[in-house]
Image (cartoon, rainbow, N blue to C red; front, side, top):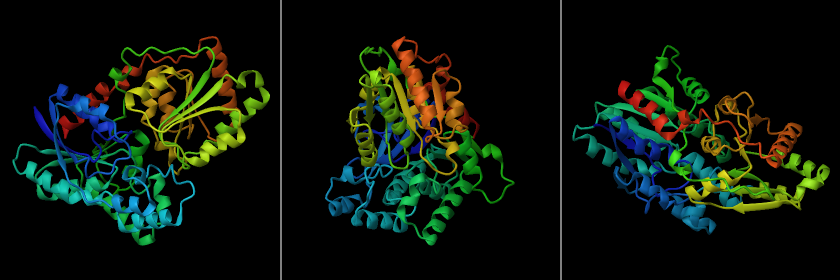
Length: 437
């Protein structure tokens, strides 16, 4: 087998969405003749928002090297009086109105921990990577971010060893939506962009999650005569095993609208809440049958807006569920909603959850750019749509349409073409890229 070295901060037992892309790639790569070797942070030293031990079983056979890390979250958690896990931000979904301490912490994070607060892991990951590469068996290294400090490990290795380096961007670097929350100075932004440019220039291959994100990363190179084949994308997928033997538990009494994942103030859903409020006022005969279920880290302001505008709404908040339980919830839902970040260049956003949403066979309503990559993806399926987040009337009409189909048991999407988005299929695409590098 061809051996490759994958350097990733997020690895089981880390939970959440950030871990899944390379966890599943690593799981299936051996079936294509590629043996992954992982360098990651030891959970005792890492800063994880969520822990999900169910993920560990999926990668038990993979060679993993865990290292120490030196990170600021212990000090920060003590300063704000929270546990370490609670102190780790996640899109600032829990900081709608930051305290003075939180504002100071954001400023320090944005201006003194460049590119991110996990940069203390660099020296530890680098030491282990040099030890492994010095044996001469591995000639391909993959780094994945965020945290984008991981790419700086790849940059060091590229300069020291005769290797091919793939840098994978699951999210943007300098353009990521929460950067504006860090009160960055011009100097900090300049340093951040310089690091980003160095990484994109030096890597042999830039990989990302969709076509528009690929174009965004291509725009970072100042020399426009670069080889465009250097840039590629492989979509996130869904794991068929997670849906095996899961049957939808039909509830004829309640029409359940479900959102899974982070929902921060940068992902506003005012239009959805206003549309639902209008339905409760004008269609009182059905309002008692509607339930909204939010699973994940939710902005307190969004929760309050629901309660203020639709006080009679059956609203259920679940902070976190292990992955398999979360899959069961979206399978049993009747309408799935997803809100992409409200940012410039929003066309590049494709939520990883959309793949799992599609795999459920349930209707999907996404809020974002109706002409973006997410819309292109969902256009393959019926009863799915991407709407402008402020278009209350269209949102209301889609909810009512899906409610009517639910009553008639006609609201399943056509997902005959979903197999090409399986984790196995996307890993096959990755393996082909690795073989060509």
